[in-house]
Amino acid sequence: MTQKIKRPVVLWLSALLVLGGIVAFQIKNDRLFAIAKSIDIFSALIRELDTYYVDQIDPEQLLTVGIQAMLKELDPYTEYIPEEESDDFRMLTTGEYAGVGALIGNRGEGNMVLMPYTGFPAQNAGLKIGDLLLRVDSISVLKKSTSEVSELLKGPANTGLKVTVKRGQDTLEFSLNRKKITLKNVPFYGKLDQKTGYIKLADFTSSASSEVRNALVSLKAQGVSQVVLDLRDNPGGLINEAVEVVNLFIPKGKEVVKTIGKLQQVNYTYKTTKTPVDKEIALVVLINERSASAAEIVAGALQDYDRAVLLGQKSFGKGLVQTMLPLSFNAQIKVTTAKYYIPSGRCIQAIDYAKSREDGSAGTVPDSLRKAFKTANGRIVLDGAGIEPDQKVTEKGYAPISYTLVVGNHVFDFATLYFYKHPTLASPSAFQVSEEVYIDFKKFLEGKEYDYTTYTEKSVQDMEKYLVKEPYFDAVKEQLEQIKAKVNHSKENDLGTFKKEIKKILSEEIVSRYYFQEGMIEASLQEDPVIELAKEYFTMPTRMAKVLSGSSK
Image (cartoon, rainbow, N blue to C red; front, side, top):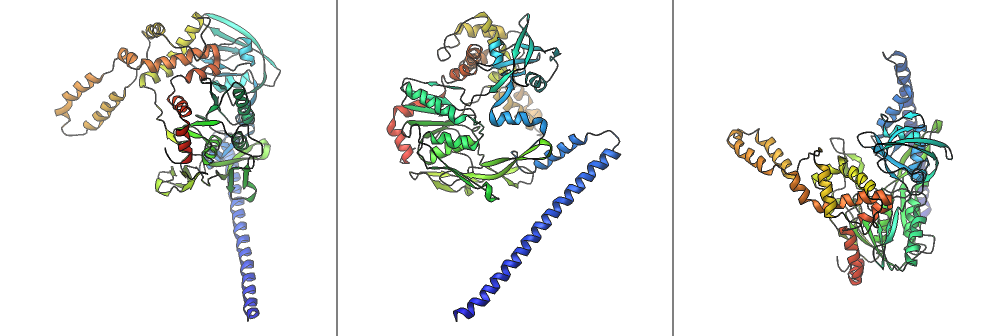
């Protein structure tokens, strides 16, 4: 009886498998034909445009525009990288390039040195923040774009160049020798107090984990017993570097992240492979809305293992993995090939690019559809919208006057003037803008343009915009004018109202003239509410333990 039933079943299954194979083969053939057909049409289109279009076209440029338009239909992380842009992309992934080691940008008059990186040719030669670039070798750069000037400063390592700058009323010439520049993933680390270490991790290029390791080992040697790992504004980078950073704090053999995609070769489980530097040290991780990708893997994995308390704002929500694929003529494509899942099993991708709204924008995962997962200690965590901190801290934005003073370069220019009047400065953590310096800043602003719209003015303007459409507008017009007169801001009052905020911005900018990027970061930690909360947690270990155990928020 069993045999009589088994034979037809086997025959039926065999037939089904053959049929399935034929269908799959046909579907694949249809897709290949559709691709070949589209490529042929596209090639024919380019040829006909080149022949018949009324004006001369640049086929290469037109093709690049077409490719970029096509990729916009997917997600913002799938990118075409032509050969001429490969060096810039390599710098983003490795943190390395050959040049003079300075950040430049346009500040009205032209391109200026905004930050010479410590220990590299620009700083060693004596270039200063605020130097206006006049010439690179014999080429005038006053009217060139920032990207054009940047390309002139870059070049093969160990090649020389001359840079002419305007500094105040002086014109100065510097001889530099280009070097291989490796940007730091950890631009600053130090002690917040005798027991508390601080590590700023700004990126995840190829040396990120070794830099964090060195910082952690150094801090421990200085007697640190608790650490703040700052991932705020970290855009992410290499996934293996994220795994190695997590491994500094959790044991060998633990899963950190899993990638799952359409093809088997992109599916991979990343585990810790080394003995950690310290699996017990008290740890607080800081995140915000600009912490993304690899930064979220680190924060999420440490949260899933209940290894660290997370403070700040909800992270960006990028749970997609990209792979570099070579194309013809040294071009490349960075293509999204997988999603990643952290130890609890959650994917934190916040935007579903496969499901567009009617207006063409990508949709987010509704709160009602977010799935719950559990950390090692049983705490509930959700997928689909970034990493939620264990305690949120509202990120305070700049007041309109502060924003205008920064964008208008008034803070930048005053800091430069201050630097040349004061040859030395106290340490970044000790320096503060005094009342006397602030009075000088207000005098500096006299006669300068820095108009802006306050929040209240904007509200009144919005109200007026809607009132003019109403039939009773004439009846309320006089009262509206009275309101506008009363809320009309006084710059002098705002300089007093927001003095504390403006003094902090001034302090960081002034410190950067003496101590560069490292000093600017150190100065920014003063009166930082998230840093203060982290230090508070360390003083109450029972509170930290309760959060990590899930018994209290």
